[in-house]
Amino acid sequence: MTIERYIIAGLSVLVFILGIALIVDKTRINGLQADVAISVKLAKAQEKQIVIQKKASQKDKEQLDEDYKRKSAALHSTISGLRKHNTSLLSSLPASTGSPDEITFDREALDRAISRYRDAIQKGFGEGSDCQISLSIAQQWVQRETKIYE
Image 1 (spheres, helix red, strand yellow):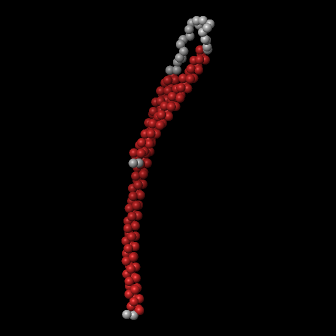
Image 2 (cartoon, helix red, strand yellow; image 1 turned 60 degrees about the vertical axis):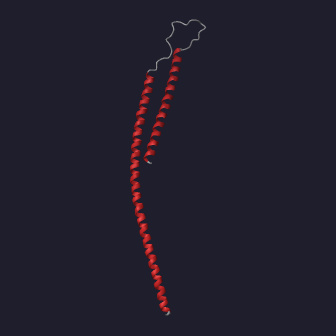
Image 3 (spheres, one colour; image 1 turned 135 degrees about the vertical axis):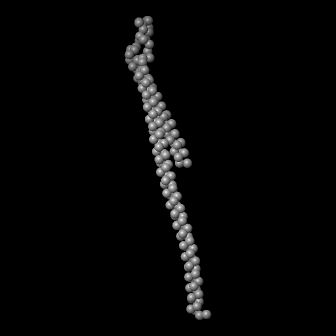
């Protein structure tokens, strides 16, 4: 055999190996393209799911906002009703003081002070109750959001 035949045989083997490598690469590229196609389909499905979850979340938020407004309005109505019945806590004025040893005071000033104190207590009660309603609504929202995204 001559050197030319060895070169031709070597080149033939090289072409054969490169052909096999090309086939392997082509197969790998086709597999990657299939993986990309699957990933794109999954991404689109996830985007649709996200849109559905956002709509459900928004709907729950709107329902809970309405619930909060309703409960808060009922609370403020109750507090207003309590303020309307804000009558004096002092008994009626006695006809005369029994003796000089008894303490006397300005009944109107005391009644105003008691009324301010009662108003402050009712305001604190209202604010506390309003906070409790807000906390309750927030807890309901968290529970619903957790269910949506499970």
